[in-house]
Structures are given as structure tokens and as C-alpha cells.
Image 1 (cartoon, rainbow, N blue to C red):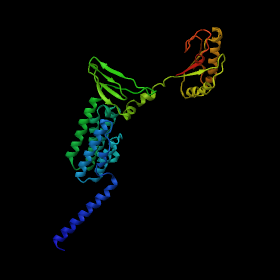
Image 2 (image 1 turned 180 degrees about the horizontal axis):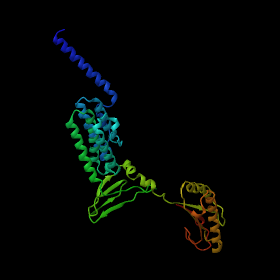
Image 3 (image 1 turned 45 degrees about the vertical axis):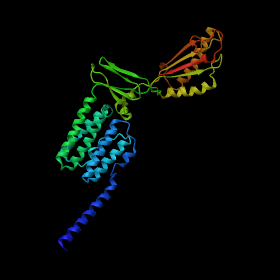
Image 4 (image 1 turned 120 degrees about the horizontal axis):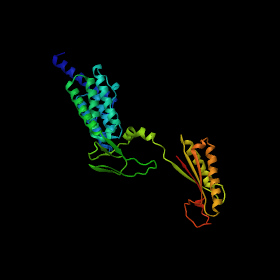
Length: 347
């Protein structure tokens, strides 16, 4: 075999090996970002920037024929574009040198602390650069043979987290719906200026007492749970009011109210430490003295049912208003079904 023949055979072998490597790598994930062109932009600046950052990292690794990392970064770009809040890569996902573990562990923890303070929503683009810089740093540290690239990714991370730390300082205000789904509005202001929050998850940050509040855009739904989840869970359950109606001149519930009583009792049962206020009312069809007694009898009917659940008597109050607090004002002697009622407030 001549030298030229051997060279051609070697070149063919290398080409075949490269093709086999490329085909085998297909198991790792996508090797282009064509899917991104078909997707609508994510609804947060963080995810928009994160998708772009991961796609750029994938492009760089593709140019170096690093197919596993190309697929890894492209996959993250597509997931971010679809609205998934991806966390920074875990250290266990990379084969890292022991000398780098402590710094990278601290760096990831620093990112997660900032995310828990709302940085992804408050400083979206910077937070995306910080996460992509960290993942890039991990990837280059695993390869370990390009010190300039390791230093570059680390510098991107440090610059970004410095920006994030400055952004999350101060008081954060996020507008959330009431428990019944109703959304109000709030003005966040001080001598320096004000910001009106009037849309769901609109947010503002006040960095100093004399600095004007700054709009932070729409807070991500995932970040609401991360930042405020514990506080929301610890908030007292709002009071619930029920109204039960009675047949004229009696302490017998109407059929509809008899059915509703079951819901009242179930609501009380679900409260860990319930406070129950029961008040009896009548219309003006009878005498004042008769109506006072009748209203009290009606309230005691509900009181007995509540105590039957095992609720301590000390947390239940019973009052009779007789005819003195009508929902529908009427002349004396007038029968009005809506005034013949027991109101129950459960706190």
C-alpha cells in the first residue's frame, strides 16, 4: 500500500468515525434551535433572555463539535422558551475537579439565594446571564483545558450576580388578587415619587426611603410562591359568612337553609381554631319581646349544631337582634322572609 493510499484510507476512517460520533450523539438531544422559531416568546424577561443565552452557548459548543453540550444547552434553551423555570445545573451533573467544588457550590447557592429574593423577576435579564454564566463556568471547568474560557464564564457570572444583588435590595411590593379572586390596585409612593400597581403580579421595588419606587414589571408566578409562599401559607384564612332563613314565626329552617347548614358545619370543621359568631334575626310581624325570644331560639338551633361538631363553647358567641337589624327595612307588623334569618360568621 502506497503512502497516498494509506493517507486516503486514514481520512476515510476519520470521516466515518466523525459520522458515527455525530449519529451516536443524537441520543443526547436537539442539535439545532429550529424549534425556537415556532414558539411564542416567553412571558418573562428572565426566560426570554435565558433561552437566548442557552442558545448562544449551544452555538458555541456546536462550533467546537462538542455534541453532548450542544444538545444540553439547546435543550435548556427550548425548555426556557416554553416557559419552564429551569434551575442552574447541579454540581452532580458535571465531572468537576475537586479543587473547583467549593467555589462552584458557593456560587450556585448565591444564585439560589438571589432567586429566592425575587431576582428572576426583579432583574430578569441579569439573572438569566448569571445562570447561563454559571452553567457555562461549570461546563468549561469540567473540560478543564481552556483556562481563558473558564475565566470568561466566571466573570460573566460574577458581573451578573453583582447586578442582581443591587437590584433586590430594598422593599418589594407585588400586587396579588384577594382570596376571592378580586384584584384591586395600590400606589407605592414616598417623597421621591410613586408607582401605581393595577395589574396582577405588578411589582415595585423601593431601594431607599428617599428614592422613588421603581417598577419591576410583572412578577413571575413561580417567584410569587418562592418569595411569598411561606407568608401566604401562614396568613389567616379570611372570615366566611353564611345566612340561614326560617319559616315565618318558627325556629324551623327553610328547606334550602337546611341544606346550607351542612356546608356551614363543614366549613367550621375545616378550620383548625375556629371562632364562630351566631346572630339571630326576625322580621317585624310580631311584638318586639316575641321577636327577641324567637331570634334567640333560632340562633340556639345553629349553636347546638356547631357544638355537636366538638367545637369548644368558649369560641362560639350567640346574640339575638330580634327585629332591630333588618336587611330589608319595613314598617311594623310587616312579614319579610329575608329578615327571618341567622347569620353565621366563621373566622
